[in-house]
Length: 552
Image 1 (tube, helix red, strand yellow):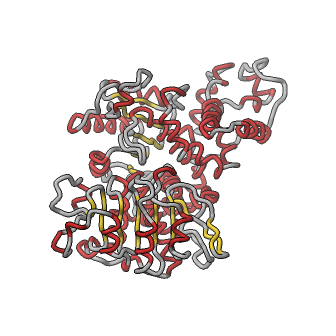
Image 2: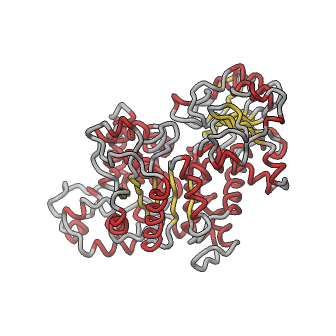
Image 3: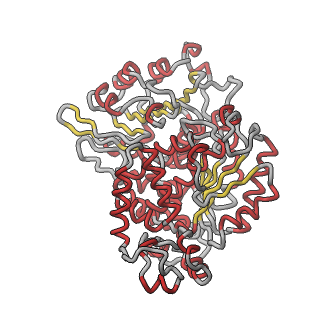
């Protein structure tokens, strides 16, 4: 725990004030001596429990819940009451809890946020209608804590869901839970933030119980000015914090990242994190196929924020491998709702424009309006889906791809499950076991012709907790491409490439183990570049020293 913060408030907090503070509360874990000192005598049952006894009791209650959303509500209630016990329990059941506290069950929580709202889980809500309140709101939320990591969202572009206004704050809360559970960042040093810029979701605007601003989203200069006021206040109050952007819309995500990435320690998970995890998965696949990155041809189906983040990350790595910018761009083909993206189209985003093709490259360019047509024409070796269009990686398309490459790399990444471009089972069967697959949602092993195929999950949680914690532990001033590349290679090198049916990414069940490794690699990269604020002689030790443990 943030010991300075804890010591200061423990000097003043007494009785029920202690029990109501989730950073202090130990419930029946308070010893008799502590109960007397803190004015808790008589407020708790006589029996003093260990944290393991409490965790066993809580897990039994968790198991009694049947619906996934009920399980999530139970865990959120525990989180609000006793943060240490929550993380102690999650540490014991990380694979089981991950899809409950975050993806995919968080989607149900967001959709029903107005109806099940009970407590904001220490979140901060900043309204575009009240820019004068930004600084005081951040002060109130921090409540004296030394904030080192902020996850902020305006929830305009939640993958697979779209615009959900303030309901999307659960994304920021869930992300921070994963940061702590996976990497060990002190939960007293983090802050989830919702930027309420309005919403263009008409159903929310018409819902009398919607809790956000009931007007259309502000956009353009007014919106960016509010963001700038937020960043200015955040940096003034928490100058050593890492600022993590989450689920911003197409029009703003890249613009915001580009504005601040060379000024402060900042990170956009949808752009950089998604690109990192997919590239790590590609490296894992290439370790299995024994092929080179520079020999691959990429078709990306879905050229939004996530899709373009993936393309940009792979493009940068191709340049690191020795290709010129012009040569590297030749490896990419973007397919969106218009079909293959050409440079003469009028509705392209800034990110898309750099990777469009010219019509004179093709004899029948006008026919390339579907994914099937593009795959037949391009003959890709890598097919990546971020389209949220279910079932679009059809048997015909997959078999066509497999006829032109020995080990097709196919990543249907859209989530939740109902939006996936294909299932892992079908991809394995349609390619006779040749496909190297990662999915956006958890997938069971696939049994095919006597081989057990393990399916990697292209889940950003495999990389962002270790990356972020490494940046915080190393007191990083900036996140550079060198550090990003170091983290990618660290994760991509963790697969067992010689095992038949091996996954292209390590399993979520080993999340805490490899998050530690990624944090150490990240911290070392920061120190090597001289980007650490504080003097650090041993990067690995700095990570170990910063790691929080979920025990009383």
